[in-house]
Length: 165
Image (cartoon, rainbow, N blue to C red; front, side, top):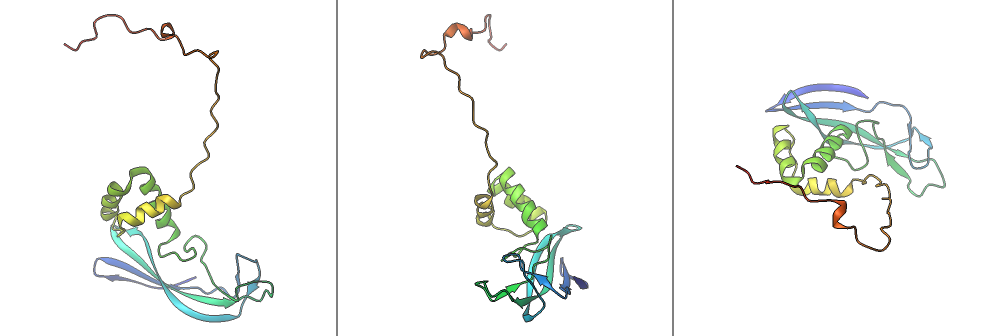
């Protein structure tokens, strides 16, 4: 990947770049290709730089897939660690927003994202939470009480005066 220029546009930073690898491997079938189908520009939102909104203008190429068994005849190159399929955000920004949305919830994360110079709606944050894979929960061990509920003597009530003074 080659960085073209870094420009300040208003209160935002715009980075232009282009992909330069001579061959690209298709992730679905693993076949490498060097035959370019077409080119187009992608606009990606990235994590803020110095408190300023950051965008990346990335020129990418579509390649012909040379695998005869592949259902799709063309594919778009992805920059590892930067882009993902159909993404309009960088991998870093996507991960940060997912973690914030999961930890803080929609409204709080929406307000925090504004302070981080990232424009995102509450609906999008909810969608990010729904897409996350939940961690596996270990199965709980159950213990038998012999068919009877636990006795009240197993957890005696505290003694003494507990009123606040």
